[in-house]
Image 1 (cartoon, rainbow, N blue to C red):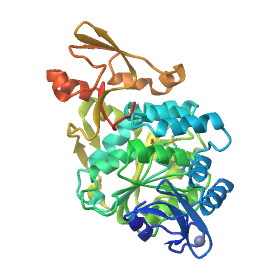
Image 2 (image 1 turned 45 degrees about the vertical axis):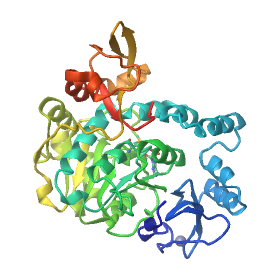
Image 3 (image 1 turned 90 degrees about the horizontal axis):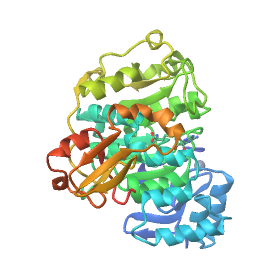
Image 4 (image 1 turned 180 degrees about the vertical axis):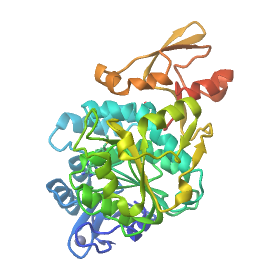
Length: 420
Ligand SMILES: C[S@@+](CC[C@H](N)C(=O)[O-])C[C@H]1O[C@@H](n2cnc3c(N)ncnc32)[C@H](O)[C@@H]1O
Ligand SMILES: [Zn+2]
């Protein structure tokens, strides 16, 4: 973590600022703290692999003890959930000492359930596509991205990468423009290593007060996560507290209790979610409409907010709250063609060489994935042939006149380096 993160970090329990303890646990490279201990007026928090852990559970205490006993590796393995599993610990060391290790390799080691599948293919699932377009749309206005942005419950940083792209941290910038926060350390570790290395990461529990100072962020994003939080009233107040006066709260893909959802969480009705954000002037948008607009018309229309009654039993919707009325306009989406990572075939495709061509076949990882995210067929073709070798590194020139089409349809994606 960059030391400037201390300007905005606050203890979730006593609310005071934090200072670095000058002890043996401290390891820095310039202004970046790799590991160490942060102290507030009530307790201490470990920083491991550059990630401050602002929690007070048993695992965090063990990490703190390990750090203070000069066993930094033990602290890391404990937070990653690998303490007692020697085979996985050895595999983790073997993998992470190799430069060639990919996000997919380490993800498969750290997560063995359906969440791993969700994250690996996250960059092109329909809910990501909608959230990404919404963020890029509001990012066209200069103001929302002038300050820092928070991706709360941000998982392993896929949308954080989109936020960072709205206002990249420039050479010479001391402070990352974007902060990713999640309760699971392993997700943050993957984000810092692969998905969104330019952002700061903070491990914290969104069921508690957020570990940030008031009025810190111009954008507070919670995507596909709010229903998993039990203390919704507290979190809504906290999201509005950490947003600045002009700040925007963005919540794509909110599960409604009036519709059917996969992995629903503890859902509320649209009216109840809206009431939680009442003081920040929330507006609701139909996810079905947002998706159709993006896929068919390349538009995000924030003039067409709807009432809870109009949403009816739609399974999910999007909430955007801001005092800035000029945010709520119609945005034409511009094609995003710059490559910030590396061009890769979407991992949902199986690639086979046929002479000089490559044949790509859409292959869902599981039937459950297909059931949940099958709407990706609206842009991903079942099968497509390209006159180029797509089994190795891909350059724009490799794709020639097919470049625009393959990017548009998300058959070829701009993935982080060493993603899969
Ligand atoms: C479905 S994932 C969405 C991840 C990310 N927002 C995205 O759109 O890619 C839900 C995320 O919420 C996080 N989460 C759940 N409960 C949390 C809590 N109490 N505090 C912080 N994060 C939490 C999970 O760890 C998970 O990464
Ligand atoms: Zn404290």
